[in-house]
Image 1 (cartoon, rainbow, N blue to C red):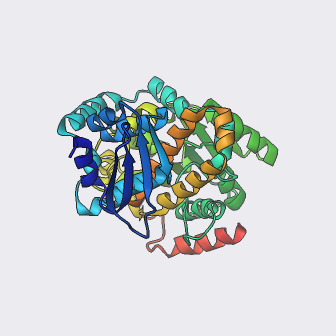
Image 2: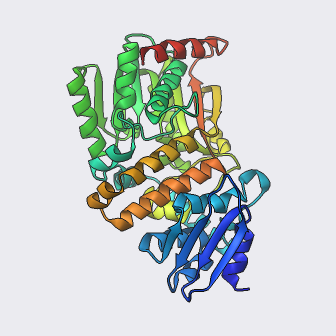
Image 3: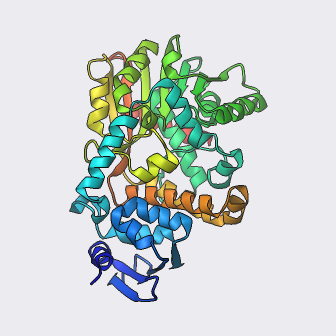
Length: 409
């Protein structure tokens, strides 16, 4: 049996994969599973070697350049077959790569995590300053580019994103007239929602020039530009005092070396009775490294933290961690919705960029989906208070506020 066949036999045990090699030889791996549709892939010459040397990145690049094509099923089906047989709970995945590969990744991570202010802006621009039309094609109407909150797995993406904003706003315990800082405000959806539903005044900050233009335009169109303002500024350069701080999907770009800087700065900006909420992707198995595909093509400088790393960042800063919630499957549901929407607009996306970009984007969304569905990724929502009396002593207020906000729509 060829080396690649032994690899496939080890990885694909649940569900059925058919492989057509460049010389026409076919091999079938795994066993049929009603929950996992069968997948057939075809390799051109040279593709196998890339995958053997670096399974995860080699597979991604072979798919992107067309030397690995999928003749039955799709890339989400292929990655689901590869990971469903080896979920995180059962032990290490055969896709983790060699010890040498992981050592190289760790060395690269130690260099890339030095996320200074100039590099931070460049890293953010790499992803968020893409053609504005791209995000309209697969996100919800409010352009929430972060994990939604599915009170019912059958809910639409639109409903789940509204419910996410209500869930976060309830934890902030907002009152009219409060001053809120939104760090990493995206296209302004959260800031506008907080003002509309609670009367709070909001300052949103971003490092993306494209996001800034959209956010400011939305505030002007809503007639609230005097109450909801947006600035192109690094959070480290901010001054002033805020009653509440919220940060959704930004902490992944801070870098582990700067967690203490982040929390120190937030504490300095937070009122003495202030409250802060961080929503971030997180690892459930301790510190790790960013995979090469993501670092190269999607989020340069990004890193998904373990809960222990976040804790080391805020301990000693005199912030009280008042609540931690783990959203286990919500991002998998979100990513599946994004993936399905991307498939539905393939022609538009290819016209906007090209076939290679389309394949890269679908690989990114599919790979992210299986990371939350089967592997070691979750979302954390961490609430902090500057004073132990800043919030009620039970969590009942969260549910009550969330119900009121959901009624507003």
